[in-house]
Length: 276
Image (tube, rainbow, N blue to C red; front, side, top):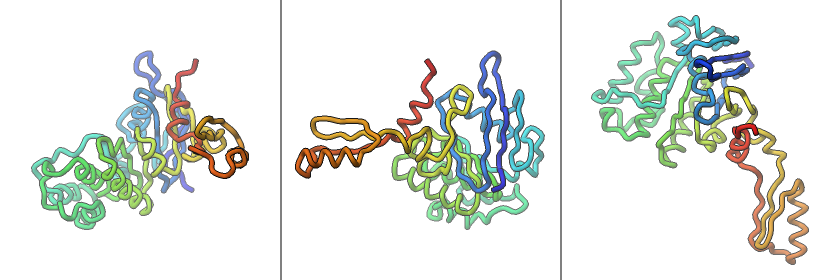
């Protein structure tokens, strides 16, 4: 697969504080890639450098074959950005907003088709200020993709959403990915990363501390399972064997039986712990 993003040895300091400390990163075209990390880990600085909105101190960066630090307007037309804050065109309708921004691009998506794609057909005539938070985020995504970007950056896209709105939004993002858009997602919702991303990077203290698919990140798939029953629990590499032994002990039905492996959140919290 062709690389959409290639980073080697990326560094950025703010005074004496290293925000990014020698980061390497590769993201393939057509991939949905999540970047996780606590506040202050360096993920926002990294993404802003990739977007071309922040300078770096050193390192090699290529986004869609171009160094963002020397990018032109044509390169910018190939990327889409959805920031945390919602659009502020409060007095314009959804339709007016998309038609207006479509004029900035040589080959924009059809505003009416895009309104339908993001699920806002019934709200197309409403002013932005009349929309719910979830509907505003759908407008933000529509604005981010109206120029047919090859690469879309999503910054905490579902912050403040209720569970139903979050899952509806995930369906929208999955549809964009199915169309071939490369998506780079930053989020604090581990379930969101697990649902959407093919690969996940965890950044802490300005460095990459783990990289992989959500199911195997940080050795998750091979970690010990915890088998718990009414009056005991044990961690084991052979949970099936343990359950069979318990079944014989309890003559078939094991009271209060649960078998669990570490969640993505468990692995993430371990990965971002400060070294002792």
